[in-house]
Structure formats: structure tokens, C-alpha cells
Length: 290
Image (cartoon, rainbow, N blue to C red; front, side, top):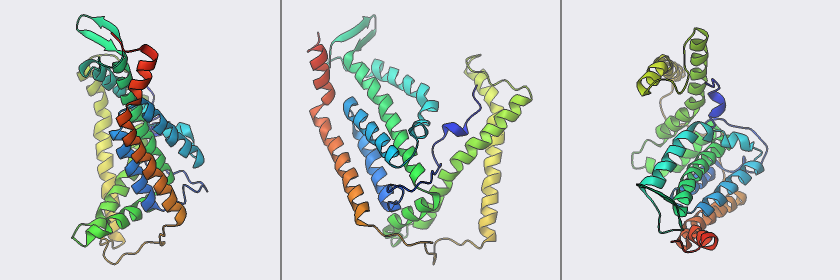
């Protein structure tokens, strides 16, 4: 079992660099990543998802963020994604798309099923990569102030914009801290002879082996939350009333151009689903099927 939990977590890791993408206004970053994630969720075509994932990786290269860092978060959830893809192919078949490849008893697998399964894996991979890239180019303070500025119109209606932004930034910052704490706990337990081996015993046995991790990790999270609350009280933190940002944010024409590009790409990604590029490619490769 690998004990390197922190290396597999990309959320909350800010990578400082002097790239134009890092200097984009945080409000534009938040709105752009929300549009991109919505477009990826609505996209069903494997071809379009591959293009979207390629665009995310190109953006990471332009931002001087290592591509391995962006894709590192896919590894821990890959077995779960493969299981979902298998269920997608067996439970929701697309036999009308492409020829039948496998037919055995109650199992039937067509070219359309394989395309749908691959699209599911790549869609979640693109979502994880896009969010990992966003957290790599947006600092915690930028995320908090950008979210607060975006939610400021709702503050007039009584919505706690500052509190919501603070909770979001703290939750995102706690992800790598909890991963590091889990790594320390697992290494300490393993040094004392604990067995965290995979693939041995049933689900109850594996859950029982992980119990020495979950309990101290939960207690550590509570201790960190209590320390944070005491620190905020000691500094006389009273909420967002009367507080100002440490630096003023101003949307430049380059920020507007970047947002327009993301908006156009997201709208194009959703509208291109009507043409069903997967059907065109499968029919061109395999013909009309049976």
C-alpha cells in the first residue's frame, strides 16, 4: 500500500508562477472554471471530451503548471471510475450505435457501449484536471476575495457572502492538510505493525483495518478546526462587516478576453453535442452495425 497521500491530492495546492493566467482576476477565474465544469458535465461526446481535456492540459502548460500535477488527482479515483464505466456499459447500453462486439448470455457489448464508458472516465478525469488546475493558479486569499466579490450582490438580500467565501477557502485549504495528516497517521501505524494491505479479506475486514486511520484523522480535524476558531477569536474576527480586501481587484481587457474565450468554448462544446461526433466516427469506422 502506498503511503504517499499528499502527492495524490491536487486540490488546494497553489503553484506560484509569473504567467498571464496566474494574473487573471480571481472573479474571472471562478466564473470561467464554473462555465468549463458545467460544459464538461453536459458534454456526452467522447471526441469533444478529449478536446476539452486537451484544452485543459494546454492551459496548464501555458500557466507553467506541471501536467503530471494536474493529472495526479485522477489516480486515486481511477478504480472507482473504471467500475462506473463497466456499470455504464452493462446497465445503460447503446446498442443502436455501432456493431455488436460481444454477445454472451445476458452480456452484450457494442461499440457505442465502449465509447460511452470511455467518455465517462475521460469526463471525470477532465473535471478533476480542470479543478486541479484552478486550485494551482488561484491562491487561497484570491479565492476567498473573488468569491466574496461575486456573491456581494446577494449580500444586499441578507446572504452571508463573506462567511460563505471564508468557509469555501478554509475547506479547500483543509484538503491537503488532512491528506498530510492521514499520511503521518498511516506511517505511524505501519511502523507499529499495523496491516493496511489491499485485496485481503472482505469489505468488513478492510474497513476494520482502516478504522485506526479514520478515528485519529477525525479527531485531528476537530483539533485543527478548534485551533483555527481560537486563533480567529484571538484576532478579534467578527465577520465581513467593515472589512476590506488587502488589494483592489480590477478586471482588465485581457481578463475579459480570456473569459470570452472560455465562454465561447463552453457554448461550442455544448452545442456540438447535437451533431453527435461519436456516431459519425463509429459509423465511419464500423459501418451501420448489425
